[in-house]
Each structure stands twice: as structure tokens, then as C-alpha cells.
Length: 318
Image (cartoon, rainbow, N blue to C red; front, side):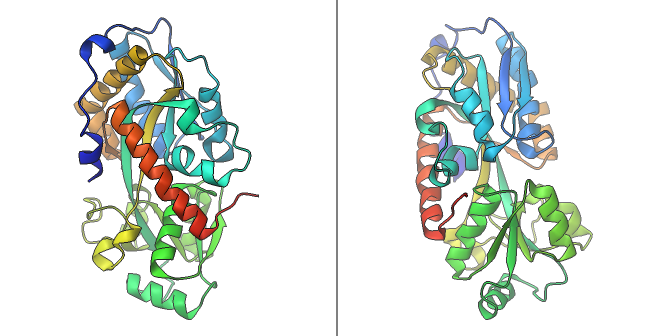
């Protein structure tokens, strides 16, 4: 569904893409600390993009404030095509709804280059929780309103908003416990300190196979090959809770169309290389290409979708 929507727009004209070339190394800002899926994806595409562009693409980690610090760096950079952002669901479509003093507007101050990857998620619980499937979990949550907690990697992150989307669809009350990244949340989940988490599938494959976590539902539009035996939310009666986290490459708003076209062409070429495709698959994310125009439409739809969730779930940041 997502792939068809993103690839519906024709590719940019080759002549336009070839009319601009970088004159110095390009900086790709990752608005989170090193080591996460966003950082890994950025490093996978940076090298082949640099080869295609004739200048190295250097990844720089600038974390903080839900990605806003790194995002604002790119928004305030010179609009000359030499600064990129590996943006994600929360930063590009959710933060604008929950941060009162966000220093920039992604739709106004950033320009789409192209999609980079998608990552389906999964609802997991500790084996100590007395549930065997999603229906059991919903029944337990309804019997104990507000007593079960779920963890996330932070306010407004996809691990937070996607869990809120499911909570609203299921009509249950859960206590949100935000963490600074998924690592601490996963540790507390496995120990039973919190009772549920909705997290990227790749991060849970090992713990689920080892029996340290129990998978209840995949959140994507179809079952994921990493967990083919885990039914989707739609299969279990919650199609309205389907959600996929994603990463997209952006640049500074006002960047010339020729530069955006060339950067987008290089990104799509990088994603099409067998090495990049394999490395992304090994990292647990699915490569996903698009044109700038298709990404712009997708971002608008996602911003509207997650804005509704923020309002209905009353998500705020102090």
C-alpha cells in the first residue's frame, strides 16, 4: 500500500537532475544518537549516494528534543543542497502537534528529497503477563483500566503515537511511560516493570525467539517475514490501528529544484544497489524509494493522521 502510493509519481526529469552537482562534501544529519535504525539507514545510503554525487556524504549525529535539534539545524542551513536530514515519523509528522515551541515547521522549512525506509512494528509483552494473545491483553486492560503501562522511546516517537493509536482503537486505558530511547524501555519490559511496548520488529526478534518477550500483533498492513506467525492488527479486528514507522531524506527549504532532483536521483540509485538493500534488510528495515513529489503528499497525509491521534489521545510535552 505504502510502496504503491509513494511510487505513483513519475521520476524527475534526468536533465534537471544533471544540471546541479555538489561542490563540497554533503552533511547528512541524523537527529538521534548513533546506533539506532535511523542512524544505520543513513550510513547505509550515505556511501553509495556519495559515489553517485562525486562528493562524500558524511553522517553527523545531533540528537535531542525528539529530533527537533537536528531537524532545526537542517532547516536553518544554507539552501544549497549540501545539508541533508534523515527524518522520521515523529520529527516530520508528529512533533509539530505536540511541541508548543518547536523552532521550525517541517512542512515549511524542509524540502522532501525521497523516502528511505519503512519499519513495521509489533506489540510485545513480557511472558510474566497473563495473556496469550491480543484479545487477552485487551480484556485484561479493560478489567484493570489505567493499571497497565506501556513504554516508548519518548514523547511523540512512533513507539508512542502508534501505541496510542492502538489504545484508542481498542478502547482501553494505559499508562504511558516515556524513556530516552528504546533500550531502557525494552529492558524494563522484559523485567515486567512495564507491561507492553509497540516497537520495531527487528529489535524484538531475538527476545521473542528466546522467550523473553511475547509478540501479540504486527502493526503493518501485512504479516512481516521476520515474524510470519504473528497476525496483524487488522487480522485481529483493528484495521484502523495499522501503522508503520519510516525514514525519509529531507533538505533545507528553498533548495533549488535542480539540486533536489539530483539528490533524489542519487538516493533512489543508492537504495537500488544490492548491497544497500541487503544491509537494510539485515538491519531490520525495508528500503523504500520515492520521488520528492510523492514524499510531499505522503508527509501531508501522515501529518494529518498523527495530528488526529495527538488530539484524541491528548499527547503533550511539558
